[in-house]
Image (cartoon, rainbow, N blue to C red):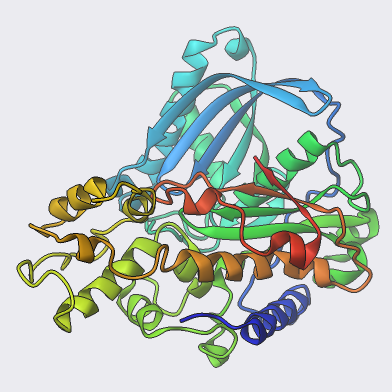
Length: 419
């Protein structure tokens, strides 16, 4: 389905409505619009060393970072781990013990940092109810996670208990959603101390999942309690906008759905949730293409000699999709290898060329660009020159997640800042 300009405008209008409703106390919005309690932005002149823990989808990283000022920083040490499906869906204590062990592995590499109590910045890429700058309750799992005993619990307290079991003197000094961390990184690099300047005012994640955040003025956030509202001029809002289009009374109305979107949603673990995420993120794009291919096979248009191929859900990954798009050789040998691994043996050149290039990427990037530009449409907002801090490093997303969404400059006059 090719989205028309009027359809995109309607989606953006619906998105802005959900933003405004989500900022109110009595909200029915599909987007949680979580106040992050981040009420100031970095100047870019901060210096020093810090330890950061970043959990995004099935990957985690622990880093020792040196801030050098002038918007510059360097990574001094890093530990990377994959979180296995067993840990993602198993016992929550085991999951957090695994995370704490990765932190210990980094600290063992830099013993000079671990001499006293270590202050840790924790980026956690799942929906939270932020209780304090270093405290937050997981409201629901996304991205295929379902570990028990975590939803409804303070993730910092769970991590602290794991640190204690390992004998580590580590304190979580700040808890952030990954979108907020991305925006703050963009602010540091762009030296955006004030949100009113033409700097980085939006953070965007387009990887395994999708989400965004932005700077909002205090008077627009009517859900804030009186104490917070009295002390803050504004705040970064974690939108949890991957759930846009999932409002129970408006499914199919706020966000156009194809037959393939509807099938993927019906067969997913979280039916009727994260609907826009299911259309544009790395976790799901490959599965949408698999559904398209299976329908073409059922109609006798493809792979007649391999009728059992591609029958396993999520066997066709977004990474494969990106590799196929990058296969520019005349006979497309890399595509042939991918199809062979999926059980399509043999495949013809016409079959490898089946369908338009990037069948999902154009509509996905259009939806993403209109979604992320919606905060710039707020009354009094001057979008010209604003920057968007973006990260698309989620596993399985290939190059799609890191490409700039089409139409960004013409629609918002902004700058795209990869972080």
